[in-house]
Length: 440
Ligand SMILES: Cc1ncc(COP(=O)(O)O)c(C=O)c1O
Image (cartoon, rainbow, N blue to C red; front, side, top):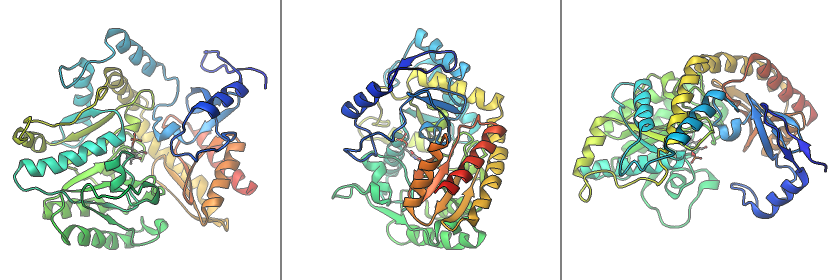
């Protein structure tokens, strides 16, 4: 194939698709991908602008996977590029265990202002998985610090909290099963009804009963650890009142409530944080993805002063024995501050709520298709659940042929566009998914 000029956002790059594809096939180990696949179906992207990306052949796509579900402000946002460049030229980073840097305090202060009162203390990391890892350690160590050790974690079997060993151990999803020994006890709660029925008010008591049994049977848990919408579990929307019920249950049992906002945080579900739909305050909250919008890796864990202060009693350090070389990287923190400015200035949370409603309304007629079992959504997370995973994969492939990137997640095809998508993009997205369904 002849070289393509991939003009995007004023930046020109000449790319030879065949050469790039062959190099990728020979040298790159792609995560979560079957070994030996030809790679012929894999889009190799060169540039992006707003909610569109362009591949090595010059073909443009509407990116309804938001890269790794983390592009909040879209591609080539000048304010985010400027923030990264400014910080890179000042100071790329400095180790937060030995010193500090200006953007660390800035982003931690901004998060404290956005989160419910009392969650003022923030640990900065690189990835959602690290935030999970840290949250489990903090929960375990907190109970040791206060002299009443607890180690059990209660969570959703269909939850996903990352792919480090600890994070995978929390999940009951088949692809997350880890080898052999149990590093700590986990009680994984199965959904008591089908994924498509979970959000119905009648499912609330069933769900809460299942968690009550899990929390109260057995040793007192260190923490209850959940997402406010089960993302990898199939875009499962939880019933209103569930997190409030879980908060009460945690208060009764003393367990810490850890809410994973890695996916839901920063406007994805039409609120700044997913747990705002239920008005609860967790004891720990983990964040990543939309926080730095995919420009640079960043994660954060915020908690209460009580949890933080308990670490004075750590027997070896009098503090948290956890951290990474690039955790809370200064460029990432500076970009995150700019992301929060963009989210505020462009009113992306409100846009996510209203455009999400439009997207869902555009997709609901697909329920008439015999292969579709449910259509659901919250904010800019829309899920078309199919009876068969093969059909969901076909639907995603058909949408791709029509210029839209969707996420295949088991029996679901999910649309998770950048929050900067506009009304025209939403109409195009809903229309294309409908056409793709007709193609299958
Ligand atoms: C809810 C949730 N938690 C944690 C993670 C893990 O984040 P990361 O992939 O940055 O390690 C993800 C990733 O998809 C996620 O969706």
